[in-house]
Amino acid sequence: MIIKGIEKIPASLGMGRDVYDDLTYCMQQWQEAGYKAAMAMPEPATSDGEWVISLVGNLLWAATVFFPPAFVEATATKVAFATASTATKACSMLGSAVAAGVVGKLVNLNGNLNSHLGKQFMADYLSGQVPNLLKQYAADADAFINDILINSILDIYSHSLPLDVQRGDEDYTEQFKRYLTSVAGAEARRKTVWERYVFLGQDTFYDNRPDGLDGTKQGGQLGLQKFIGKNLKAAAADFTRQWDAYERDAWRYAQSLYRPAYVRGMVWNNKQQLIYKKDYQKTHPFNPVIAYKGIPVSLQRQQQANRTRLANQIRALRKQ
Image (cartoon, rainbow, N blue to C red):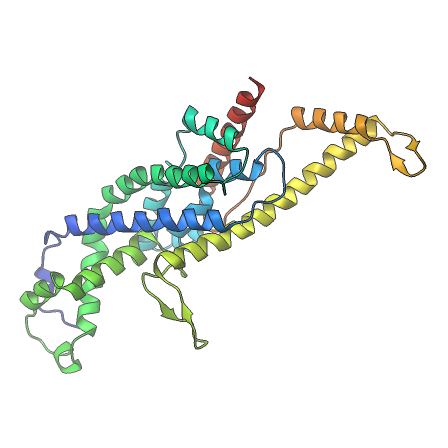
């Protein structure tokens, strides 16, 4: 590794503006990946758009790309903790303010996100989360530049040189400065911002990678989309399990109050049961709790509270 002279390079090499552009790019890719993943996800069979309420009220499905695979283990190292801490602060603002217009639009959509208006709503909603995310990542970016970015780019640059040069003892400060302003240096910088600061997962690479099976593991926006989609699929399965249990509870309640007689031999007259079932659902609203691997518990609770608040606002508007 080249050492002599490089350590004298100040972190303030005018990289702030470039890193901010990198962060803006990352957030744009996140927004588009989240939108495409949500649009590709079939809605679980429920009533009154409950799945859409969960998607909009709890945005952790889209936030999973900001966290290491195992947040608890990541906090054991200072570097991982710093970046995961930034993600925690940034994601704490996701969906924090649900405007009255959002509630009204969801009521009008009635859970149909695949309509033209539904697609526009989701695109706008995710886009509206970007400014707060970007602001927090930008606030912590100087520390990232000083502690991680410069050394990471240096490492990439060093390995690009011949071995005899790497083992030398010359001062390559000026050459490295020129590398930082080159296209290759810009790519190294953006890749490092993507993989070591913003998207910390093991499957959210900046570029495509061999998968070890003569295939390719997708990076970039498509990699983000697939990662989010995988988490959405698991969340939908958990959601469906909880909905089915909720339906069974509602029917058991209805049947405990009314057991109809046979009508025309084998057909149940369950009109009264349906009335009791709806009464149960009014007094016991469906409130699923979906956990996401690697997300801090504090964020899980906060997003669950956001989802519950949104659901209550929608129910109140529907009663008007």
